[in-house]
Image (cartoon, rainbow, N blue to C red; front, side, top):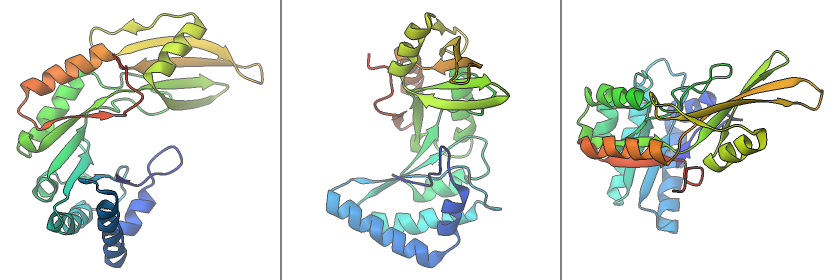
Length: 239
Protein backbone atom coordinates (compact mmCIF):
# COMPACT_ATOMS: atom_id res chain seq x y z
CA UNK A 1 0.00 0.00 0.00
CA UNK A 2 1.36 3.39 -1.04
CA UNK A 3 -0.15 6.30 0.87
CA UNK A 4 0.64 9.79 2.17
CA UNK A 5 0.24 9.48 5.96
CA UNK A 6 0.59 12.34 8.42
CA UNK A 7 0.00 12.61 12.14
CA UNK A 8 -3.56 11.36 12.48
CA UNK A 9 -4.48 12.42 8.94
CA UNK A 10 -3.16 12.44 5.39
CA UNK A 11 -0.30 14.76 4.51
CA UNK A 12 -0.89 16.63 1.21
CA UNK A 13 2.71 17.89 1.15
CA UNK A 14 4.10 14.35 1.18
CA UNK A 15 2.06 13.45 -1.90
CA UNK A 16 2.90 16.74 -3.59
CA UNK A 17 6.64 16.05 -3.30
CA UNK A 18 6.14 12.91 -5.40
CA UNK A 19 3.53 14.21 -7.82
CA UNK A 20 5.62 17.24 -8.80
CA UNK A 21 9.04 15.61 -9.18
CA UNK A 22 9.47 13.08 -11.98
CA UNK A 23 12.95 12.11 -10.79
CA UNK A 24 11.61 11.16 -7.35
CA UNK A 25 8.79 9.28 -9.06
CA UNK A 26 11.25 7.14 -10.99
CA UNK A 27 13.23 6.30 -7.85
CA UNK A 28 10.05 5.48 -5.92
CA UNK A 29 8.61 3.32 -8.68
CA UNK A 30 11.87 1.40 -9.01
CA UNK A 31 11.89 0.78 -5.24
CA UNK A 32 8.26 -0.38 -5.37
CA UNK A 33 8.93 -2.87 -8.16
CA UNK A 34 11.94 -4.25 -6.31
CA UNK A 35 9.93 -4.64 -3.09
CA UNK A 36 7.03 -6.38 -4.86
CA UNK A 37 9.50 -8.77 -6.48
CA UNK A 38 11.38 -9.43 -3.26
CA UNK A 39 8.34 -10.21 -1.12
CA UNK A 40 6.28 -11.98 -3.79
CA UNK A 41 3.35 -9.56 -3.70
CA UNK A 42 0.70 -9.60 -6.43
CA UNK A 43 0.41 -5.84 -6.80
CA UNK A 44 0.05 -2.43 -5.22
CA UNK A 45 -2.74 -0.25 -3.86
CA UNK A 46 -2.30 3.54 -3.98
CA UNK A 47 -4.15 5.58 -1.36
CA UNK A 48 -3.42 9.29 -1.86
CA UNK A 49 -5.92 11.46 0.00
CA UNK A 50 -6.43 15.09 1.06
CA UNK A 51 -4.48 16.32 -1.95
CA UNK A 52 -3.91 20.03 -2.54
CA UNK A 53 -2.90 19.95 -6.20
CA UNK A 54 -4.46 22.62 -8.42
CA UNK A 55 -5.18 20.00 -11.07
CA UNK A 56 -5.73 16.25 -10.91
CA UNK A 57 -3.61 15.58 -14.02
CA UNK A 58 -0.47 15.11 -11.93
CA UNK A 59 -1.94 12.22 -9.98
CA UNK A 60 -3.19 10.64 -13.21
CA UNK A 61 0.23 11.04 -14.84
CA UNK A 62 1.95 9.41 -11.86
CA UNK A 63 -0.50 6.51 -11.90
CA UNK A 64 0.11 6.06 -15.63
CA UNK A 65 3.87 5.95 -15.09
CA UNK A 66 3.50 3.56 -12.15
CA UNK A 67 1.06 1.38 -14.07
CA UNK A 68 3.40 1.02 -17.04
CA UNK A 69 6.21 -0.31 -14.86
CA UNK A 70 4.03 -2.58 -12.72
CA UNK A 71 2.22 -4.15 -15.65
CA UNK A 72 5.53 -4.89 -17.39
CA UNK A 73 6.31 -7.13 -14.42
CA UNK A 74 2.83 -8.64 -14.22
CA UNK A 75 1.76 -6.77 -11.10
CA UNK A 76 -1.71 -5.34 -10.58
CA UNK A 77 -2.53 -1.79 -9.52
CA UNK A 78 -5.53 -0.39 -7.67
CA UNK A 79 -6.21 3.20 -6.65
CA UNK A 80 -8.43 4.40 -3.81
CA UNK A 81 -10.88 7.17 -4.70
CA UNK A 82 -13.77 8.99 -3.08
CA UNK A 83 -16.90 10.15 -4.90
CA UNK A 84 -17.51 13.80 -5.70
CA UNK A 85 -13.82 14.61 -5.26
CA UNK A 86 -12.03 16.59 -7.97
CA UNK A 87 -8.67 15.23 -6.79
CA UNK A 88 -9.48 12.15 -8.88
CA UNK A 89 -10.03 11.93 -12.63
CA UNK A 90 -12.00 8.69 -12.59
CA UNK A 91 -11.81 8.10 -16.35
CA UNK A 92 -8.05 8.59 -16.54
CA UNK A 93 -7.31 6.57 -13.41
CA UNK A 94 -9.51 3.68 -14.56
CA UNK A 95 -7.61 3.66 -17.85
CA UNK A 96 -4.29 3.01 -16.11
CA UNK A 97 -5.27 1.13 -12.92
CA UNK A 98 -6.75 -2.35 -12.92
CA UNK A 99 -9.39 -1.31 -10.39
CA UNK A 100 -10.51 1.77 -8.52
CA UNK A 101 -11.48 1.18 -4.92
CA UNK A 102 -14.36 3.48 -4.04
CA UNK A 103 -14.12 4.40 -0.38
CA UNK A 104 -17.75 3.90 0.62
CA UNK A 105 -17.13 5.20 4.12
CA UNK A 106 -15.96 8.32 6.00
CA UNK A 107 -19.34 9.96 5.51
CA UNK A 108 -18.72 11.81 8.78
CA UNK A 109 -15.17 12.24 10.00
CA UNK A 110 -14.62 15.82 11.16
CA UNK A 111 -14.37 16.82 14.86
CA UNK A 112 -17.64 18.18 16.23
CA UNK A 113 -19.75 16.61 13.48
CA UNK A 114 -20.71 13.07 14.52
CA UNK A 115 -22.72 10.86 12.22
CA UNK A 116 -22.81 7.50 10.43
CA UNK A 117 -19.60 5.97 9.17
CA UNK A 118 -21.38 4.90 6.00
CA UNK A 119 -25.11 5.44 5.62
CA UNK A 120 -26.41 2.67 3.33
CA UNK A 121 -28.27 5.05 1.02
CA UNK A 122 -25.31 7.44 0.95
CA UNK A 123 -22.96 4.61 -0.02
CA UNK A 124 -25.28 3.45 -2.81
CA UNK A 125 -25.51 7.01 -4.13
CA UNK A 126 -21.72 7.28 -4.22
CA UNK A 127 -21.45 4.08 -6.22
CA UNK A 128 -24.01 5.38 -8.72
CA UNK A 129 -22.16 8.70 -8.90
CA UNK A 130 -18.78 7.21 -9.83
CA UNK A 131 -20.42 4.70 -12.19
CA UNK A 132 -21.56 7.63 -14.33
CA UNK A 133 -17.91 8.21 -15.24
CA UNK A 134 -16.54 4.66 -15.61
CA UNK A 135 -17.71 1.11 -16.13
CA UNK A 136 -18.71 -0.27 -12.71
CA UNK A 137 -16.83 -3.47 -13.54
CA UNK A 138 -13.67 -1.46 -12.76
CA UNK A 139 -14.93 -0.44 -9.30
CA UNK A 140 -14.31 -2.30 -6.06
CA UNK A 141 -16.60 -1.06 -3.29
CA UNK A 142 -14.71 -0.32 -0.09
CA UNK A 143 -16.92 -1.02 2.93
CA UNK A 144 -16.49 0.11 6.52
CA UNK A 145 -15.42 -2.17 9.37
CA UNK A 146 -14.69 0.35 12.12
CA UNK A 147 -16.12 3.20 14.17
CA UNK A 148 -15.41 6.70 15.44
CA UNK A 149 -15.62 8.33 18.85
CA UNK A 150 -16.40 12.06 18.73
CA UNK A 151 -15.28 13.76 21.94
CA UNK A 152 -16.26 17.27 23.05
CA UNK A 153 -15.56 19.12 26.27
CA UNK A 154 -13.82 22.16 27.73
CA UNK A 155 -14.10 23.95 24.36
CA UNK A 156 -12.09 21.20 22.63
CA UNK A 157 -13.32 18.71 20.07
CA UNK A 158 -11.66 15.63 18.64
CA UNK A 159 -12.50 12.43 16.82
CA UNK A 160 -10.76 9.06 17.18
CA UNK A 161 -10.99 5.94 15.05
CA UNK A 162 -11.96 2.82 17.00
CA UNK A 163 -12.64 -0.80 16.15
CA UNK A 164 -15.81 -2.78 16.69
CA UNK A 165 -14.46 -4.52 19.80
CA UNK A 166 -13.45 -1.21 21.38
CA UNK A 167 -16.84 0.33 20.58
CA UNK A 168 -18.63 -2.55 22.31
CA UNK A 169 -16.27 -2.53 25.29
CA UNK A 170 -16.63 1.24 25.79
CA UNK A 171 -20.41 0.91 25.70
CA UNK A 172 -20.29 -1.79 28.37
CA UNK A 173 -18.02 0.29 30.59
CA UNK A 174 -20.31 3.30 30.20
CA UNK A 175 -23.40 1.23 30.94
CA UNK A 176 -25.12 2.14 27.68
CA UNK A 177 -26.59 0.00 24.91
CA UNK A 178 -25.71 0.69 21.24
CA UNK A 179 -28.70 1.59 19.10
CA UNK A 180 -29.09 0.30 15.55
CA UNK A 181 -30.16 3.11 13.24
CA UNK A 182 -32.72 1.72 10.81
CA UNK A 183 -32.13 4.55 8.38
CA UNK A 184 -28.34 4.33 7.98
CA UNK A 185 -27.80 0.71 9.15
CA UNK A 186 -25.04 1.99 11.45
CA UNK A 187 -24.96 1.84 15.26
CA UNK A 188 -24.49 4.68 17.72
CA UNK A 189 -24.51 5.62 21.40
CA UNK A 190 -23.46 8.48 23.67
CA UNK A 191 -21.95 8.73 27.14
CA UNK A 192 -20.06 11.12 29.41
CA UNK A 193 -16.71 10.74 31.16
CA UNK A 194 -14.59 12.91 33.45
CA UNK A 195 -11.11 13.83 32.25
CA UNK A 196 -7.96 14.11 34.39
CA UNK A 197 -8.77 17.77 35.13
CA UNK A 198 -12.22 16.92 36.44
CA UNK A 199 -13.95 18.27 33.32
CA UNK A 200 -16.80 16.50 31.54
CA UNK A 201 -16.18 14.93 28.16
CA UNK A 202 -19.13 14.03 25.97
CA UNK A 203 -18.67 11.04 23.68
CA UNK A 204 -20.75 10.24 20.61
CA UNK A 205 -19.87 6.95 18.98
CA UNK A 206 -20.90 5.67 15.55
CA UNK A 207 -19.73 2.30 14.20
CA UNK A 208 -20.58 -0.55 11.87
CA UNK A 209 -21.32 -4.19 12.67
CA UNK A 210 -22.06 -7.46 10.89
CA UNK A 211 -25.55 -6.25 9.88
CA UNK A 212 -24.04 -3.15 8.28
CA UNK A 213 -21.55 -5.30 6.38
CA UNK A 214 -24.28 -7.73 5.30
CA UNK A 215 -26.35 -4.96 3.75
CA UNK A 216 -23.26 -3.48 2.04
CA UNK A 217 -22.26 -6.87 0.63
CA UNK A 218 -25.81 -7.61 -0.53
CA UNK A 219 -25.89 -4.32 -2.42
CA UNK A 220 -22.47 -5.01 -3.97
CA UNK A 221 -23.54 -8.52 -5.01
CA UNK A 222 -26.48 -7.05 -6.90
CA UNK A 223 -24.39 -4.30 -8.53
CA UNK A 224 -22.23 -5.07 -11.62
CA UNK A 225 -19.02 -3.95 -9.90
CA UNK A 226 -15.74 -5.80 -9.38
CA UNK A 227 -16.29 -6.82 -5.75
CA UNK A 228 -15.66 -5.46 -2.28
CA UNK A 229 -12.77 -4.51 -0.02
CA UNK A 230 -12.80 -3.97 3.75
CA UNK A 231 -11.38 -1.04 5.68
CA UNK A 232 -9.94 -2.08 7.94
CA UNK A 233 -9.01 -5.70 8.62
CA UNK A 234 -8.94 -6.46 12.34
CA UNK A 235 -11.29 -3.67 13.41
CA UNK A 236 -14.47 -5.15 11.95
CA UNK A 237 -17.26 -7.10 13.65
CA UNK A 238 -15.84 -10.66 13.43
CA UNK A 239 -19.24 -12.33 13.07
